[in-house]
Length: 517
Image 1: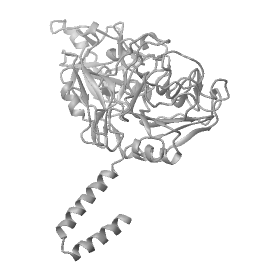
Image 2: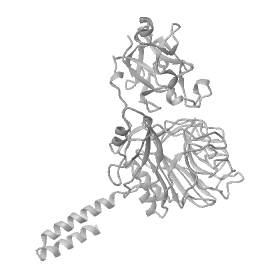
Image 3: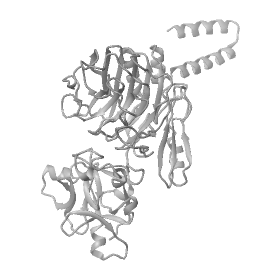
Image 4: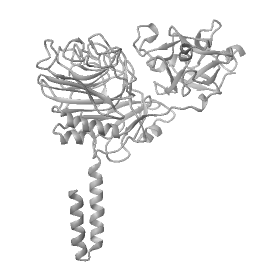
């Protein structure tokens, strides 16, 4: 209202002197300035609230209205060359086309996630730690495609064994200093191991005791703590404990959450901390805990050390999984009103799941599925004589029966028409399904269970190659070959030998090939 009044007064004054041209320039300049000022990112909102960002990481968009630098760096496998991926415009969204062009005909991994705050708190490949050797794996650059405000972008897909870290930071809270943090995550991608974290950790990669961490945790581990339902939960990793409230173990106010895009918040101050979360696509935040530090020795006061981790625990525990799109850490304890404004900003960014399609995987098409793991690049997914499913090397010169066993007819998903089912070309009427987590073919009995067991949703390949196939009824499990046998497998979790984290991303990534028969 004040701006409008000023413009009216300016117009009257200028018209009185006949300077309409000057008025036009002034109005245009004023409109452009207002437009630029209206572009705000989460870190502009935190700064306005008196709790500025001291680390700001995202592979999808600028987190400041004035940020026009690099978001992340990728390295391609073909020649080891690297490229920084920036934004389409200042304050805007990732230039995914630049990544696609650079990584064409090869694969890329994310080597650096740049800090937009100007403090140099970049995230790079995590080294070894007390819980696990290193260096950790790097995330494939194409495994988590999304759109943000209609623009294509990629998140950071963390399979078990993947991790990023910075032990020499600038401005991150230490000791009992106050801080806040949020992360936007994939609420459907999680694990039960330790620990998919983002936040403050030890600077020596070791477990140095209670209270030496303060990080967002997301997953369904119940070893140290849990909330209601079966999980996953947003909790705080405070070292030697995943806390969902004031008590060690179970806290009833921390619910299971499963939003496709999830905003997760943890913040802490002297003898005060909180957990919040919400749907990153719409609506507000819910407070799951807000109160004093846990009633366990060592957490009041805190002993934070100021390193930053992503995808791992403070001692390099790296047996869990998740997907990260953006997150920040602040100096000071953010107010509820600031966090509400940040949540509104995140929702306005309009995160959406990117459609993954393949012309070779349309209903009615015949296709063969080729393994991508280095051991097995001549192997195809095939039906065996006993109706189990395995991989084996097959060529155009193989017997006709073998080529037929390695050919599948694509059908619309029996349990979900937007997903896929695979009918055996060698045994018409029999479908690829999982049973006790092993793959086999069987004729449909018309039951809901069978239809779900035989339906798989298409995703970008976890290794950066081809496609991965997600179970519709076990969304954390995918078609995998393990020791040449076909399974439905989780990435490092699940307790079965075929859930082994080694080569999981490669073993669950498949190339489409011309049908062998």
